[in-house]
Length: 322
Image (cartoon, rainbow, N blue to C red):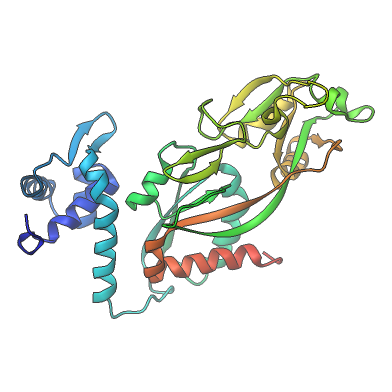
């Protein structure tokens, strides 16, 4: 169908269903009845000669055609909104919800600073935080279902922008009284004990460097350096993963009741030492450092509200007093 004959309101319905994966959810956002959404979908299906959304176990699942169309439709609607908007973004008056995908590590070290900064000046801005460990999280970013991702990333495609929030060094943690706390720590001794690792996707299908490729975004899902190395080139050392978990919060209780060893980001390790009675070890090698980044789709740069939040988050993380 030629674009001049297409009712552009149908594209708003498409975007809402894509975001919510639900006719009812879309109707609430658009403030129309579910039957109106269903009728609009029927018209759009006829116009595009595709089912677009099919009922599935987790809601309305988009077809391949819908997934192909989604980024362009979201981008086009964003451009139209920008062109029509004459009102500046005023934080104190704005009523809006931003969606962020993060690990529990990102939530613990970033969100308190951000909330402390924005709450006094933007009391009606809400944040919804979702797990970063979903395998399709970058697709959600592309589809506009998530606004920002906070995690460890390497290669990024041109459509994705990023800001570094902090740099942290790895730390190896054990329970108080662990045999490794007596005497010098060597690689050989570290490999004598089983390890608990955090695997952020719950999948063992990861590259040996700890990264996976998610729609062109290279994101880290392992930080366990010792196990990732798998074998020391000179001494043939190997390590055993006794337990893998998808969240950092699960690690301290496991260490408290066993002789297992874990590698954690330094800021979380410090909290575990303070709150859980664990201890960090002096490492026989230079700790690896990694940047915690926030990424967003390039279309956010045309969104005054998103630009404001990006500025607030980066400023909060750069402020040593926060």
